[in-house]
Length: 311
Image 1 (tube, one colour):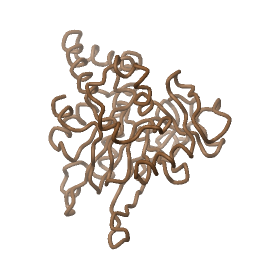
Image 2 (cartoon, helix red, strand yellow; image 1 turned 180 degrees about the vertical axis):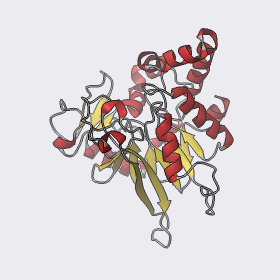
Image 3 (tube, one colour; image 1 turned 135 degrees about the vertical axis):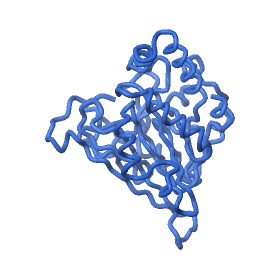
Image 4 (cartoon, helix red, strand yellow; image 1 turned 135 degrees about the horizontal axis):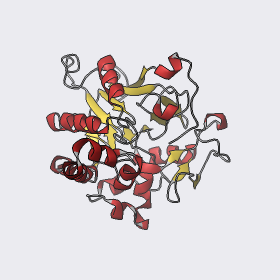
């Protein structure tokens, strides 16, 4: 927690960079993604002049069977490479969510009542110090949920004081912070919406079915937010899609969703990471490319039908 507290609430990652979406305790998928596309600190990973940075965009724990291993590995990587590994807070880095969706029980069952509770409390202290966002290459803003109503700016984000516990996140004046973790974009195409109950216009800000504080935001909110804050696009996670590819490009190419846990909650979805690189000999010199690297769904290969959507 001391290392996390010493670094800014708005982190900055250099390129090249890989951005991971939700992992939710699915250790096997994390290791397979590392094996397929590069393990942090490996010889291949540091072969170029610029070593690879990594952004893990929240929701490391809950629902999966190996949350302790996942968060343990990520924190070990963070300690060993503090300026190349960035852990961004998600809505599941939270006591209430962890009590409801399995991480607290996993700590108790696997570590015992005394040591399990102590470990859980120490990890919650670390979660309360996590950055809320990360800017990649000075141009791409990574947040777990989204931009909410989009009326905040990066300087306001930089001014947030941590730790951010349940009390702080629950205050009405911090609703915009809650939405960084919880909000969702409105799909441009009605047929692509994750929740079949989502109907209505594709622009503006609207109530979310998730909870009474979260919102849905349209393409106009994303584009205005990017223009006002001088960022090229937003990368977010937070949602899996049935039969999805693990990533989506939307909002007039100003927003990308990335989700790394395969077959999450029976969705038969692929897992993906995003590889961000600077484009050499390109004008302006700060131009970057983003390429999805996809690990195919095991359930899809067996022609398994997805379950009803969960988020």
